[in-house]
Image (tube, rainbow over all chains, first blue to last red):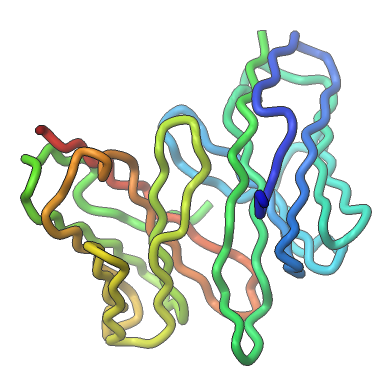
Length: 116
Length: 111
């Protein structure tokens, strides 16, 4: 069973379109994240949700709107796409540390977004 | 945003050699994580460290949590071609919900 899954794997679209990326985790984790990985492979956090509540928003343009319908899902909607949005977007999840658990964070396979 | 410094940025090594890389921060963390990313894939967790001075192994990989809590080290022994990839460190402080990632070390193994 895939722990963190994302769809689609590849997304090619034109500028000014609106698109969504979906993420699901079956690990029972409390916290989910979106990261952007640029062409230099730097991983930058965009958003974090804990128990469906937004807790981190790293000065991301408001064209990006995350939505967490429940603890297991965190979707990313992007309005009016720009060329600079082309990147690989990773979803991840982690669990608040409790006895017998850890702060390990697990990543999805990524969504390669290409804006033309 | 903040990023951790990883060294070296990239390295070519011969198959069978040992590899060392490190990660440094200006801030203290209470958890250090090491990941490997293969082309076209997401980062995969290799080792997690929770205590200053802790030394943890996972097969041929050994990682250490620096005693200052501002650095961490990863060693790979007897490298093989499938060790090729990008290795990332990440630091975490409880209560912040934020993992700060390093700039990555790109490893290439020459057969």
